[in-house]
Amino acid sequence: MPDSSVEAIAPHQIPAPLAQDSGTFRSWLKSEEAKALLALYRHAPLARRIELKLRLHICPFEIVADQVPGEGRILDLGCGYGLLSALLALRSPQRQVLGLDISAERVATSQAAGRALPNVAFAQADVTLADFGWADGIVMNDLLHHIPHTHQIPLLAKCYQALPPDGVLIIKDVDKSVLWKYIWNYAHDFLKNRNLPFYCLDSPILTALLELVGFQVEVCHIDSGYTYPHVLYRCLKA
Ligand SMILES: C[S@@+](CC[C@H](N)C(=O)[O-])C[C@H]1O[C@@H](n2cnc3c(N)ncnc32)[C@H](O)[C@@H]1O
Image (cartoon, rainbow, N blue to C red; front, side, top):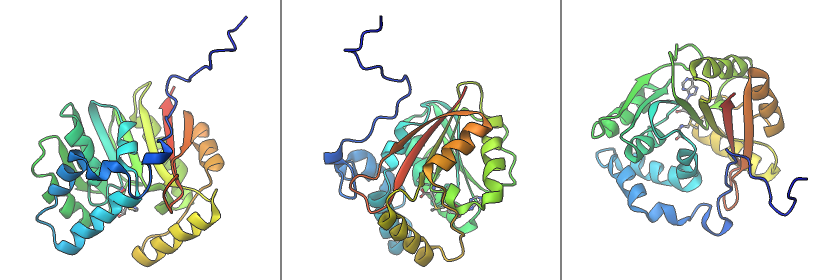
């Protein structure tokens, strides 16, 4: 008979961040790691540096990075200004990180910041068209809701194809489970990225799409303390 006193823990269960230290003013922002990350952008214009510092406040980069394999070829799709790629590279010299983004301006800023790190590179690419080759791990931080619905399943399938058995795709995106946070996020994106579309999927729907493609999926809502509806998906190629 199974021992009901011991709660089974799934091997890859995503740990929810501790409520008292998650959110916009979490202690990680004052860590040496966060300071080293921002220091890579010291040559960027002041307005950009302020924007990137705010970005670290509103998005749990360190929690996303915790889920990414510690070694091998890692793709960061829709890398923006390269914050997550650079954090992954800073954390482990055993990673070779490639950040891809459609914006030439964002890629140029990423390349300038990444010059100090031997294990990160950036390239301009539309991820819906690019050939990924292979990867040990893939991450998308707030990319998927900018990809038109018709391109989302082919993109997820391409990630699946690029990974080895037991490879992981980590997705951090937003959903509609807390309506006011969704509206806040929508307004933020509308004001900041008017040129980018917004195709948010609810987490049960995205989970179903990922399972359709072949992934085993674990989902964790990590929005405690944030005004944004952050959701983390750990997708294992079984
Ligand atoms: C909300 S930003 C997130 C950036 C970064 N991942 C971060 O978390 O800071 C979304 C990014 O996706 C990029 N993007 C949108 N569509 C893309 C596409 N088809 N191919 C590559 N990048 C794309 C945008 O240029 C933008 O930098």
